[in-house]
Image (cartoon, rainbow, N blue to C red; front, side, top):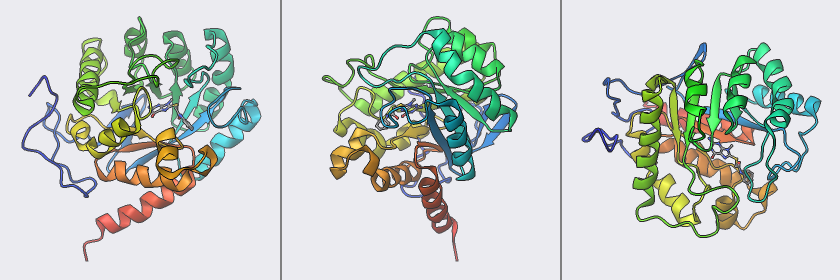
Length: 306
Ligand code: 8Y4
């Protein structure tokens, strides 16, 4: 039980959000995420809006590289209903240029600072311990690491703060991860990896309540792997850690719809709803307004009992 991270006999009904009788070791449902001075109530699904401050980001193509425009975009996402703004200064796109710590900090810190001082719950998308420390010092409440704090010193960097952390699964390295992803049992392997990383966090002094986990849709996975992970997301939710999912505009949506990235809105929203229906508590999205509207309608239906 302890090794798998799954509490048996607590299977969630398939299409009911918020109901899973899932427990953590302490025996309480994971309905909160401790993020610095803020605790995000996960009784309702939350939306993390994406702001890239990279000249080579996968979709935005540098549109928000300009600092003022990035700030305007982040504020617009907030107004659209984003609960968290995720700021990234280094693209994880295959073939993207690596960025120095100094450059990454120069890109993101002014934004982190401005948004945090406006009361926005800021997440920083980074793999670098130094960037984690500086961003949290500038007001970021969440560290979102696609490498799940595997960089040496990353565990200690986050432990030294009170920030929440999102641990994401990735097979391989960004440059080559999509070449030929292979798994025996993708859902089991991803779950075991994430529970192992969460356990390492706790051992390093990061409280359990600060941890969220993420299957890393598209990170070293085929379309079939991504669909299996989404369909069986309940297995991840059953670990007791809040589950965050990012599917927005990703290539799996393109593969299923035949649409290019700018035209993946409907597919992305459908995937977000399916993920939340299976126990995801936070969805990472580019199109925040549409995602929030869809979640509101879906939640109203789920919660209506007349
Ligand atoms: C179009 C637009 C196609 C964007 C692909 C993409 C995740 C993440 C990314 C995720 C968490 C991306 C930083 C990839 N994805 N963080 N980051 N979870 N926690 N690609 O799924 O959005 S970047």
